[in-house]
Image (cartoon, rainbow, N blue to C red; front, side):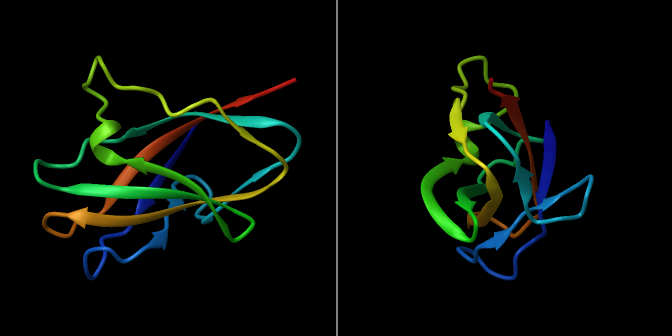
Length: 115
């Protein structure tokens, strides 16, 4: 599991890569087979604030989209995002705030190695 943070943006709908809270890097390097199992807000954004997270691989948008409204840690009905298979490469979470007053956003990504 890794926690990522997107610094408070200067405007809505401006994408920037989230930073790994542990390493300070904007990517996570996958060697061998792995999977993205879940994403969950940490903590949940305040009411009226929303974010979109796009998964990138090696500098290219994969087309995978995630939304903070579906990532509430208090929701018993929350649906996990995966597993989404991740081949070798560098993965980035490109994040934009799409609703509400501008604020930083953190989330936890859960990974699971595959044989």
